[in-house]
Amino acid sequence: MNKPLRVAFFPDSYLEVNGAAMTSQRLVGYAKQNGYPFLCVHADKKTGVSQDESVTFLTLKRSPVSFKLDEDLAYDPFFQRHATRVLREMVKFKPDVIHITGINDISIVGVYLGWKMQIPVLGSWHTNVHEFAAHRLAKMFRFLPASFVSKITNFAERKILDGTTLFYKIPKVILAPNQELIDLLAKSTGRKAFLMSRGVDTETFSPTKRTVSDDVFRFGFVGRLRAEKNVRLLPDLEKKLLEAGKTNFKFLVVGEGSERGFLEKNMSRVEVTGFLDGERLSEAYANMDVFVFPSETETFGNVVQEANSSGVPAIVTNQGGPKFIVRHDETGFVAENFGEFVKYALELMNNPPKLLEMKKRSREVALSRSWDAVFEKVYRAYDECWRIQQEELNSSGGNSSK
View 1 (cartoon, rainbow, N blue to C red):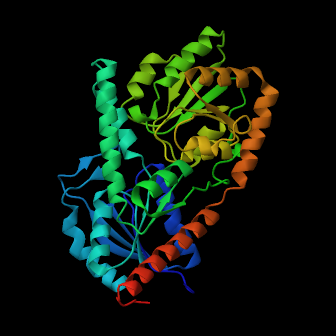
View 2 (cartoon, one colour; view 1 turned 90 degrees about the vertical axis):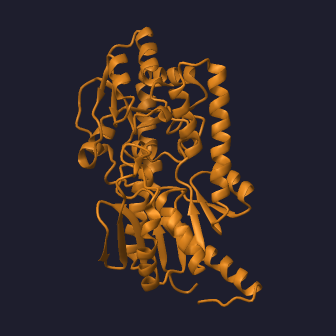
View 3 (tube, rainbow, N blue to C red; view 1 turned 45 degrees about the vertical axis):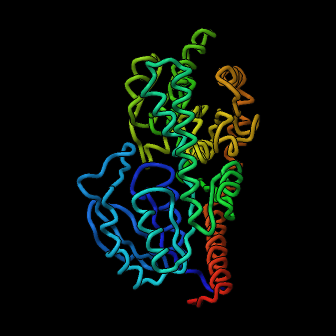
């Protein structure tokens, strides 16, 4: 294409507080910054249309029967009632490509209209729903024998993944945040899959935002306090550090969720702040010395990049997206098990020169990751999606609209 495609975007998360919503907002901002025609359809408290330069917003209100999927994310089984309203805006906007973000009420409307209007669909994968469900089931059935729970959760995880990948056969092109998911989706769907990493705002998240000057060593965590984030590792880590004779440390936990009470009850050196944003979040990151992120279900791990940008090395698991962000023994550590979380935490507490060097290197690497570079690749994927559609139309004797 010689000019930017007209994109209709259907994000499941836009106003919520999570990495997917933040990425969606950044993508819309990139389109506006460059004057690209963009229609963003998302859920809000009321239904309406507004314009912000090259970006058109269509907000849709969920019905009273909507139910929560997370702290501030819901699903409306009757969301399809908005299809006619969305169709009217789509006819006015005349999109070349539709971008959806998963199996959710909003994206289902986007897929339906893509089929109805013969507009190619691109799908980006933001959340490992199958792993989230497995972790929550494990928590729900914790009172049962471990072997039985394992059978239940493994079965559920496989079936949910099968259903999700079946849905992702609808898009012509798929975007995923790490190589493992790219390989999995390309194999299971037969579609072209490309990397959609995430950038980081190095001005918002910076070591200059640090406000503490005492000698307390701060381990940090930022994210939803839910079972799938594996936050119960934090009390265990605190216990091991105390057993090792460490006392001058604390945990700074930023987030909200069902596990908050457990953390506050089982940790003696913890400050749980709840959700933070803006300058308060920037300061919280910068006040940490080491970021501990035990989640095994992340597709990417925005918070790890934000910590690195704040000059904070991270200890992460060897499962999911964060292991692709951290450069082992350079900007943090990739732990194979709980024992290695303990080992690396003690190593950084006991070796201030190494910690200082890793702080500097974390910041340097974060400075090399820009949002513009990420979204330039997304727009190339839009072009590829449109091109595939044209080839299919031409081969079947259909007519191209461009």
